[in-house]
Image 1 (cartoon, rainbow, N blue to C red):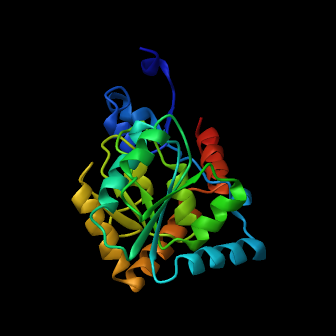
Image 2: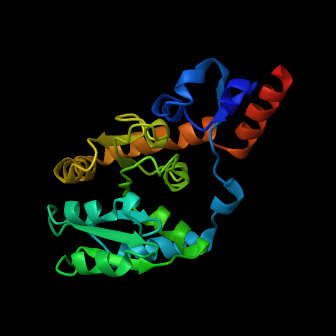
Length: 237
């Protein structure tokens, strides 16, 4: 009822509007103003570069897949673990973060030497792993993941991302299929592993998607763009 009396309704993505029975009924009032990354937090220096090179040396001749986030159900980390089981030993899957499912996830991955749990990462370490990785894995599966700031941060670092299709979530607005990364059917572990292999087999594709991802973040998901969007909205009121 309150939406009927609102002059403007801010949503973080068009997907979120389409996925909400309330917002979709008030489309004419909705304005998309995406979330933004903190560019200051993402700045890195020579020390970060040195550490990232050290990580790459540690996993020399491996394709480095990286994921991070809270270990909760909607983040889909269990699906990434299952996808890893379909990959050869040419890969390493690094998982950052912690949460209520950490013990269960570690147990699910205990027979897969490719998977390494990094624990909770400092901002310094997060930047090191983002710099070092070849592929960014973002396996969230429900619209509890409303946008995907971590996804946008990895794209800012020019990393090609792999996501699941999530109706009503901004994830598939942030990462565009075959433009900034690869999107596969929700919870399809085999397709997720195939996407990892697809990116692993083509450095040029990784570079192309990664560059597109960086450009998309700069164009739409920075703090300066957020300010411009808000100011534009205020001017129209």
